[in-house]
Image (cartoon, rainbow, N blue to C red; front, side, top):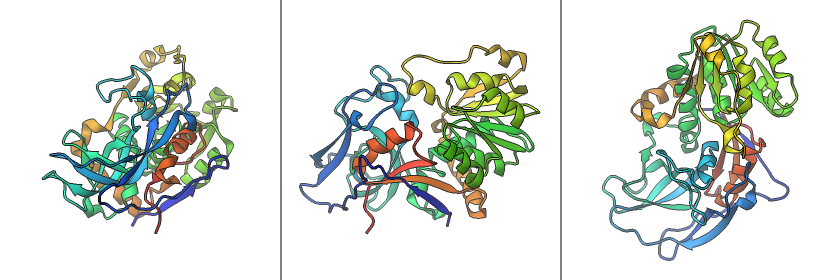
Length: 366
């Protein structure tokens, strides 16, 4: 089994609660976290509200899932803004449960393709129970991997797959190359650093905005060096840590941080653009003024989303599981207890307070 290093996070102003596993039957109460207001910049817990509703009876081609874990992912911040809907997701509605990724067990089913007891990962909502229709994208957890459910929201889910596909397919990382990763202390960032090492990168440098997080990345996660983008002279630090330039930049942030990186890229460097946290939480657009560096260095900047490669998930997971079992890859979690803490966890994550993958365990430990 994979080693799973969990960093438990507490909050003095809003203690973490535990919830009991409810029995399935009539009048089942569902605890949900709804979008109470549009976040202004970085979200705060008050942007969300906990409500209780009765689980509705199942209709034709519907299934009821008891959510075991909820994944907190920075990308969902983008769809909390009014008018933010796109080809991937519609804008979230006020007063409706917040959309998110969950791992849940089927407890009732009127669908031929979903069997009671089956555990699935899908894009549902921050709630204890979800009703899945035949329009929802649900992916069964492959039992052959024999890994815990939470890993399929982390290293074996969109988190690890984003890091893997970004480095292997988009950046085409080669052994010995220098890699720089932004938001290195986050879910995808810490995975990208470990995967780059597993793929043979010569040096891996990470950006983080907290001294404790930088220390953790170097001493526990295995980064060769880190740069505190809030306190360090970024250009000077890049010159020091990447004296031969940058071959691959795994970008989770976008915004102004991209500018100093572009000044240090090598000829035919590759930038895998995974996310834009700086844009999600900024009310004013930001970005580099030196994009011509891409032209001058014949470099590539390519955005990507993993769901376009679902046919390759199983093969990618086989690689990731191999690294997990060999110890080259470890799971780091900031785990919260109780679905009512999804808003707290999400806000903490985007405020830089969490280390690794931020996840909420919905069902209380027995």
